[in-house]
Image (cartoon, rainbow, N blue to C red; front, side, top):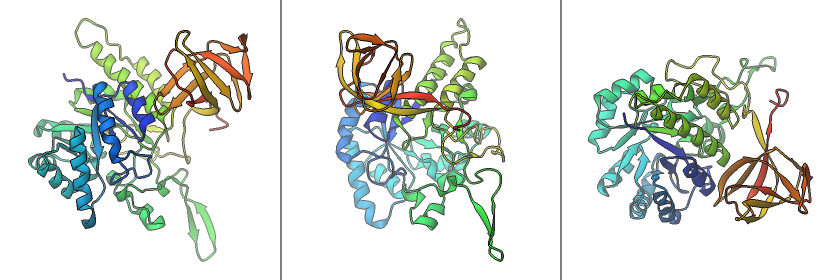
Length: 412
């Protein structure tokens, strides 16, 4: 059985480095043109060679998203983008507009068909294979049984989402943001008005009522950690994590958890080693995933159509932790492996869970073992203090420092 590829989002350099460091086999990202996450920081075309060099040095594949609808005046722009992507060594383009498919075919550039194409049956999969697709990203609405049947009938790579945001519309084909705010989801500009709470207005009396007991247009996020073994056994080629607009620590945590789960599954496949991906381990992993941004966690469409209980219920995140900025790194001492930090706000205590985030560093997370203030060991430090704490991983001046705090039920 082939180990599936683990594909991570990369909205900027910090997220890209975090994803690679935590075990991604591939990353997907957009430039500032023609991708479905226009509100992510994204990269410039000029960054592509550097991205490819960094990823190849780490044995990670690079996939460029060109997955919006394309207008007539943009055809030359698409050709230029894909030409430069090929010259840079990008491994594959993710697209769905037939104009992009035609340009990829003409330039002999490998392409995957995006979930925006809503591929949900073997006939459609076969059609895209005939057009030259190397891979198809199935619609989120496909069940696990659907996926198995399509995989058995069409010899093409299958990619599916395993974690991240779900959309109330079929594979993101929604005009709500465009109608209300002139920001089209199909151009990567969605501002997600669906995530809000709504009222029903009776115009004759000017009376209003909250619509439902939850956020009726805001589904919970997909999480497959509890049945990841079933997805592996279905023969899916690539597992995709959604989240190019989310934080670097989100990418770091989610990638690391799924990396561990996949590796544990395969470590017990030799017939001699006990299965280490137990129900108890999955439960622990689920709690790790709850700690970072989520709107609640759901199995999506894998086993049935999501029901009424699988809506977010709140605006924003249900994460069990939050990060709190406290200062910046001013130096790193390699021999003792320690970071010198200036505290600009707040308090840091011994045993606190710390995040250090930087564009080159990525994300470093650890528990404070010791705090030195003026070479003296202290239990806590406050705003204005210049402290040194042990840190096994290299961090850099100007990296931001946060402490991670648990969120109480009252705060949630």
